[in-house]
Amino acid sequence: MASDRLALIIGASRGIGYATALRLAQDGFDVAATCRGDTARLDGLRAQVEALGRTFLPVSLDVTDRAESIRVITELFADKPPFAVVYNAGISRDDLFAWMTSAEWDDVIRTGLDGFYNCVQPLVQPLISAKKGRIIVISSASGQVGRPGQVNYSAAKAGLIGAVKALAGELGRRNILVNAVAPGVIDTEMTRDLDMTKILPLIPLGRKGAPEEVASVVSFLAGPYSEYITGQVIGVNGGLVC
Ligand code: NDP
Image (cartoon, rainbow, N blue to C red; front, side):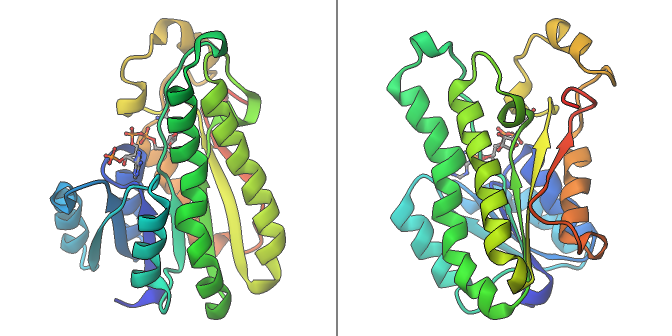
């Protein structure tokens, strides 16, 4: 697999990650995609990517398992890192902080923030050796402004923004760009049960976003027209956060 045109999408089984993998394939990338458990879950994505004439590498990975994540990522990519790395894995476990359980806190932080370390840190030295690369992190509007009922999620997503800005500073001179995309309310399983009657009035564009609308921004950040952009947070939120 040609690493120069390889994109690794961490958390690609559905939603934004799936749309991103497909969009990157449409834009000429070979794709390595992760899911938890059986990689047969990625067969539909594989078929679409391969139909575009791109290669597809399915990877089984639970980002909360530090030892396993580091082992898998290192085995596959230490010698040939992907050009573009998209850290998309994330979960929400909403609750008022007064009632938030330690499991709700830990699960969200471990997936959203610790997983970034587990999966992306092992790629940094290989990327430095390659002297090029893009790291793109899916944060959230909740991480930009903080959302009541999502103290855990806002903390994880704000933590990613801090990490992106610091890492952009470390890697800029190495020709590696590091940016975050911060979606608002996107139409995926994660938002399926939200009561939109209360949320829609807060969104100037008056609708949920589509996963493909996030994917196109990720593709821009992975592509040739964003070479002077690093350390930034790009909102895809219909005006929810200005
Ligand atoms: P989905 O719930 O549809 O998808 C989440 C993805 O993360 C799945 O591919 C899932 O894989 C993966 N994932 C979750 N936990 C783990 C884990 N422990 N190890 C590996 N992969 C894991 O959500 P979305 O597509 O909506 O969200 C994608 C990202 O965008 C998330 O980071 C989310 O926080 C963020 N986001 C979403 C917004 C929205 O409105 N939808 C708004 C702002 C940000 P699996 O199938 O194995 O569970």
